[in-house]
Length: 252
Image 1 (cartoon, rainbow, N blue to C red):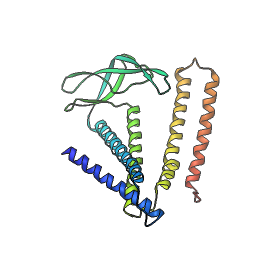
Image 2 (tube, helix red, strand yellow):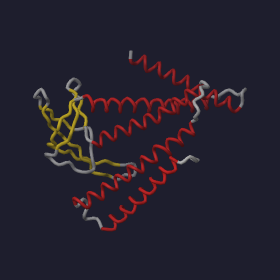
Image 3 (spheres, rainbow, N blue to C red):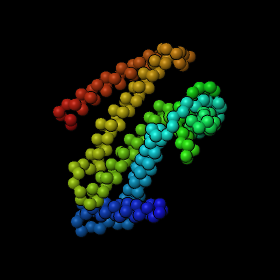
Image 4 (cartoon, rainbow, N blue to C red):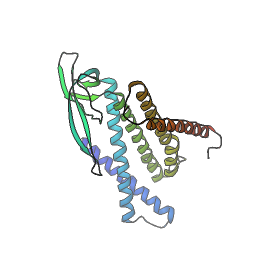
């Protein structure tokens, strides 16, 4: 049954992609028909958009649902596994994956390695919030970082879903008042850029607070702290300017 649904959705997406290619050719010349290369290229791009948007949407919604519905437990880190992660340039970074233990409401002791890892080492005995589904035996991290990551994935999936909807409207001549370029500009200017600046500013402020209150990375020279404070001021002023521009009548 599930396979039949996937095949049906694939065929529908291919048909929509063909309609998009057909309209693109018609916009250039009403008598022109889309070629095989155009149809293949548009189909590939549209299928990628559909696959990424629906996959991310399913994963993030299920993860957020699990964090809300499944039981929350305070797990204790009992072991930390280290491994080397290599990037595309060949640089390696030591990563740490914690193994936690907790007791369910039914009295069962669960010992599992979390599906997360960090460049900062975990300490044995520290408490880590988790969500656990007794029926499926699924265990997920419930830290603030994991929730923020899922929300970012949800935002990205909705962003890609917008292209899927615009493609449907374009293929079937449905007037929605926005095209792909305008949508991209709107997402970048009003969502991605402000959120990126807020996230960067929050990270820099967190560094300063940790440095001044706990001695975090106190071995770094003082000029690093001064540079970070300078960028905090610049980003804060930039955000104020962007808010004024967004709220002004002349949005161009």
